[in-house]
Image 1 (cartoon, protein in one colour):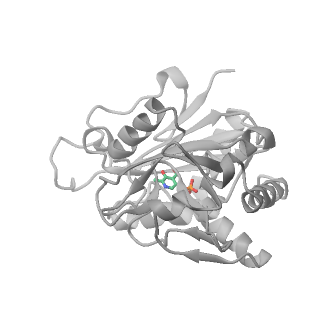
Image 2: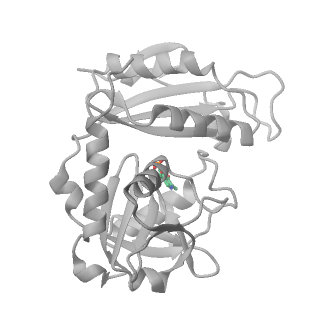
Image 3: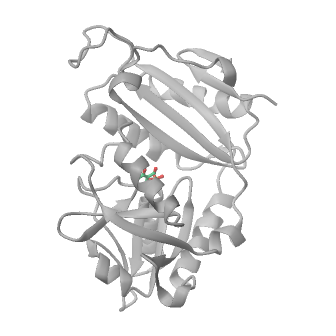
Length: 287
Ligand code: PLP
């Protein structure tokens, strides 16, 4: 079955889906995006993603492409037309098409693209297998809290990780503290058994899975702190893992070639993976 992509009001076959060469997303990265997980044909945490999208648009003074209710129809229709069961839904909004000029164009409509990508269903065995990360300097702009299309440092960082045989690169600020991965949030479990992830200021993207996990920790009585942690602290951690809509929760068992938690997935990571998997199975029908 061929993939169908929504582009500015039309559902097009993948091979015909295109935007104008003067789309500001293409020329300036002048746009924002969201990636939703799809599980059993349902969007995972749909409204929190849309809340974050609206925040990103607001921070960049960009007009929403359409009201939220209409956008939800487009998201569902894209899932339906692609018969997506498991995978990701990618949504991108840009400031639209206008003759190239850095300043905002005066009267331009936002561009909207939505596409579905199939990935294998949530598979506990794969998720339980641990991964390696490397650490790299965080060279991004000072607003990674906005989910903007400007991902060049993230692209270069991930490539560095791949070339080092690792899954992800954890970015480190000038003070030696881990901010986040190039496409995921970073977590550790301290010596004292406390769950730690960077506080959601301007230094990181406040991940939807990050927030969901903190809520789960709260309701399960798991001790946690939102604070910065250093590379040294991560190296000495009992457990480490990363989270994102596309990666779920993935145990990190090696940082810069050094084993974490004896090179095995830790018990708290395993518990959180289980809780998240349970949550996915409780998702209501796609309305
Ligand atoms: N941090 C960065 C830089 C990301 O790109 C992502 C996801 O793409 C995340 C964190 C995790 O966010 P979420 O849990 O909303 O997928």
